[in-house]
Length: 131
Image 1 (cartoon, rainbow, N blue to C red):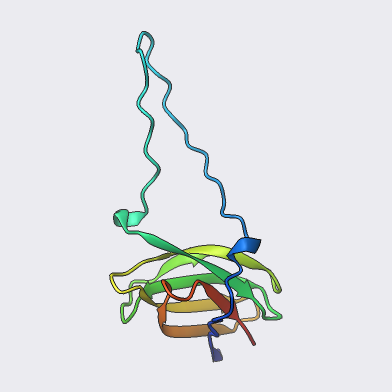
Image 2: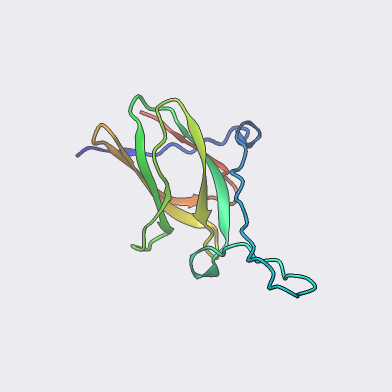
């Protein structure tokens, strides 16, 4: 399997082109006779860790299968994005470590993979996956 370097675009973010997904909030029905129901809280991320939303553009000819992230230097990989067709873009919620630095690993439908180390996702909100 051949590895490539993940290109990180420093150009203007594409965030204005991608709408963040809306999540429905399901509230429990109020018990009969209750004056008011407490609103339910939004689901927390795993372990309550904050995330950074990053726009990922797949500029490769092959479809992205998945993108994984880990705190820089860690082996604790987490899937942050699923399939993205070639030429498309999507938003990924990347876990924000204490210093915003993460390692990224992308796998593609053609069997190729890409790695990037020590990416500052707080400063670079756009990732461009290239051949």
